Amino acid sequence: MIRIDILTVVPDLLDSPLGHSIIGRARAKGIADVVVHNIRDYATDRHRRVDDYAFGGDAGMVMMIEPVFRIIDDLKSRRSYDEVIYTSPDGTRFGQKEANRLSTLGNIMILCGHYKGVDHRIREHLITKEISIGDYVLTGGELAAAVICDAVIRLLPGAMGDESSALTDSFQDGLLAPPVYTRPAEFNGWKTPEILLQGNTAAIEQWKFEQSVERTQRLRPDLLQ
Image (cartoon, rainbow, N blue to C red):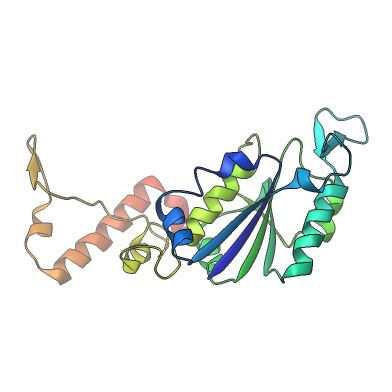
């Protein structure tokens, strides 16, 4: 089983993505334990304040070091973490290889960035991995944390009905997945490739590989580099 602790200032944002589909079923079956923590619970003033102005006069607010330190310190006093991840647009680009690696770990903590980010001392001293899901800026790191959870948990044994399905996903072998078809074999004059209907497994696998290479060359040539 994997446990993922998510630290956020807006926990309600994660209710839906973590409660349905594969993640919801994996949590219900005890395959994954995802616990969302409100950083505001670790603030000390009556307004539960977690942000302040940045030194140097920059625009925007910054997550304060004290409540973030307290929550990380509290959780680490209860268990050891294999990774303490910070979601940030300037982190390492998240990909399938990293999802595969994280799925083999036991305990993961994810700190969701918010506002203009977190006091940099947290990143310097407590974070072990910084992850970005793309070259754009979100309102906060909660959706990025949900993406990471989804990509990781679906790989766990028992999370999917057919565990072999994940092995044929795009990016698992460095290629995009081939096209897929289902019944009816012909619709509106649009036909399924004949080779998929003939039952020749070797020929079908060769066709799939060739399609994957062609699609990758056409759509994502950067993957082949």
